[in-house]
Amino acid sequence: MPRDLNVGNGSLLVAIDAKYRIADLYTDDGWLRSGDVGHLDIAGRLHITDRKKEILVNASGKNIAPTGIESLVAGRLFIDQVMVVGEARPYVVALLTVDSAALAAFARTRGIVAASTDELLGHPAVRGEAQTLVDQANAQLSRPEQIKRFTLLPGGWSVEAGELTPTLKMRRKIIDDRYRPQIEALYERT
Image (cartoon, rainbow, N blue to C red; front, top):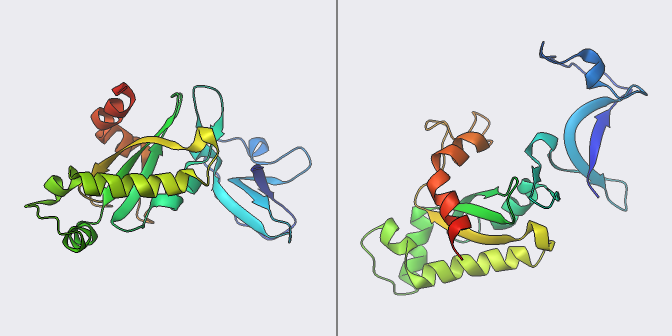
């Protein structure tokens, strides 16, 4: 069960944004609120699974940690990056970017001839393989966390386009805004 992680009893340098009160940074018993979500395993090892501010709350009120879902699909076969969406929505959907070189290699091994990455994205074998990857990930997730629908996007997100931070973290709001029509289409389909 994910819990809010707190840090205490050690040397720690903390930069405090002026909009936060110092009292809000600490629990009543003196622990620093880290903003991380994680759990301890049976051996007592700490596993950080997400950032508290990235947690999605779906329409049913279920808290969903997107990073764990995304990591099950990202980097597999021709899928490059993944961003799940589901805040205040009935189910989770995903934007999947493809690595065009890996996609071309996949197409060659399957004997698929296409003129462009966009053309390959619509090919039934490509969609079917992407669905298989999503299904394999879904088998490891609870029902509310499962990706119900997805769309394949032809290129990856980048720092230059403003979609990633310099440390390569997704800027979810920017990506969400940029791909709003594709996201809405995933929720409109029946």
